[in-house]
Length: 149
Image (cartoon, rainbow, N blue to C red; front, side, top):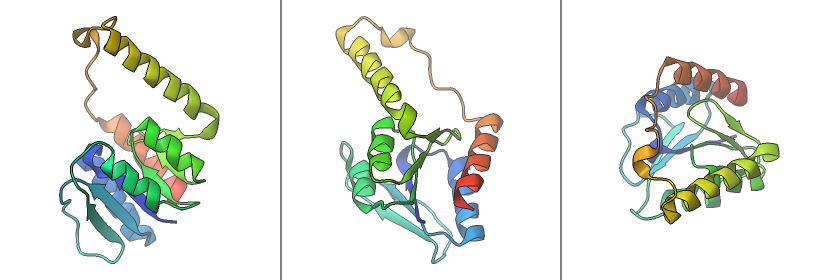
């Protein structure tokens, strides 16, 4: 198993948990972002810097991931592509994306995009993303440990 991290949108606390897990379990973990990520020196940690642009990091991960690997992402479209390659996908909030529910999540995402695009949903009416808190950290740590063992 390898871990791939959609690192541009991953909170620092989650990155730290991934690093600790990678070192403890000796699992290769690659952080993919459009900027350098500070990582401690280790043969189990790598940073791939991709060009800026729409889905460049996602495309790198999709091309690199193999059956049985784990991808850390909040991107539902990326998670769907990862599941199609028989890999696992985990959100930084500790939710494991699974084949049985990913299509309904994609549909909900597309519906919200349509609502925003047509003006039926005013961006000011939408809630802001909640702060990454202790509950998120604990849920993510537990799920990561369960999947990497």
